Every structure is written in structure tokens, then in C-alpha cells.
Length: 299
Image 1 (cartoon, rainbow, N blue to C red):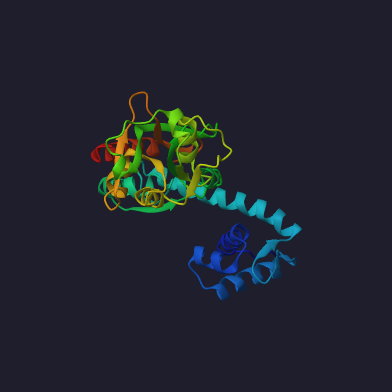
Image 2: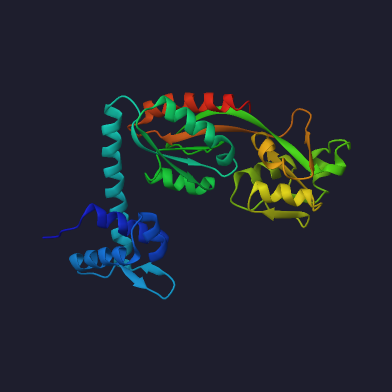
């Protein structure tokens, strides 16, 4: 009789996702030897090798790939059972997994966490910060309950609720403070600093400047808004950042902030979740709390 535990399935899924024993063990909050032992026991129970072990990484065998598909379905079903139990309480309680994109997380999360913690007693918030494509993947797979992103996402399986609209501002060296605000066409001729590929904020900035997805020579990439602003302060170029980031990112850099005349660049921030989630009703109510938290920030 096959004797697999839910714990083994979770460890297997983590190793399949990370393709590295150390990172998978860290994600599961266990030691690497303990994770390895559980995987070995699972392989012995199935009588098949699930992973090819390499010196720096592991990869699924053909059999392991088939197992991974079914394990993810099983884990998704278990998550839905937990969601159903929480939804039956008619309120949010217990673990709630929220994804947030990096151009929102540092600025909005403190207000959101404070608001939700005060509103929902017993709520255990788990935050994941990453780019939109990964959040969509995690949300689709049941690893997240909801996500705060720039809309639209355009996934039919997701409910999208707009929270607020936010302008982009131009950050220039302090010496440029008195210069006129350049038109989008003029920005194309300047050394523009943008987030690296994968960030939706980058795509929105390129669209405003009427630049295609291919990177022109005058565009330089950065890994965070902090890096971009510090580069501007060093005189390397100019950049666009969201309004909510201004007070945090510009306080320690010799830069000036300029606002575009309407219609300037902007984005719509919203919450998304699976339409089929048993928590859909409660998440809809929670979206109102998140909107209120963002209003408290005077975005």
C-alpha cells in the first residue's frame, strides 16, 4: 500500500519548484538533510527516482514531472479545503497569503498590515514580494490567496478590483529643478533609467515615453527604485517613479521631483484573486480595507 504524507508532497513540490535542495529546505523551514530524507522515502514508496541529482542543482525525471502535475493538483485541493473552512467562518482568519509587486510593497505594506491586523483578529498575514508574472503563476497555482498589482492583468480566471489611481513623477538631478518638464518625446532623447525587464512599471514607463520593448542605447536598467534614484542623484540620468515612492526614495538623494501636466503617466493599482476561491466574498470586503489603507497614506 502506498503511504505518502502531505508533508512529503509539500517538500516534493518545493524541490521541484526550486530545483535546489538548499533553497527548497529554506522555503520549507527545515534542514537540508531532513528534506533529502523525506524525498528519499517518497522515492522508495513509489519505487521510482523522482529527481536527477547534480552537483549544483536537481531536475525532475520524466516520472517526476508526471508526479509533479498530480502533486500540485492535490496540494491545490488541500488549500481549497482550508479556504472553504475559513470562508465558512464568514470572516478572514488564520493564514492569508498576499502577493505584492516590488514597486508597491515597501510603500504600501506598512499601512495595509496595520489596517488588516486591526480589522481582522487572528489573521496571520504571509507576504510574497515579486514581479507580476510570478504572482500570477503563484495565484493560479493556489500558492497565494490574492495579490496587489497594477491593472489590468487580463486573466479571465481572476477577479480584478481597482483600488486607486497613481501618477508617475519625473526624478532629475537637483541641478535640473528649475528646468521645464520634458515632453514624452524629449524623454526618449535623454538617458532614461528604468527597472530591469520583468517589472510592469518598466513597461508602463516605456509606453508613456512611446518606446518599444526593445531597449534603446540610452536606457539603463536598475534592480530597484532606490537604485534608480541614487543613480539619478549621481548625475547618471533621469527616471520615473510612482508617487507613493517619492517621500521614501528621494529623501537621501540630491534629486528634484517634477510632475507632468495632464494627461501624465499613471497606473491603476488593484487587487486580484481567483474567481473560484471560497474566500472571494471575504477578499472583496478586504479590498475595501486595502483601499482605505492607501487613502490613509494620502497617495
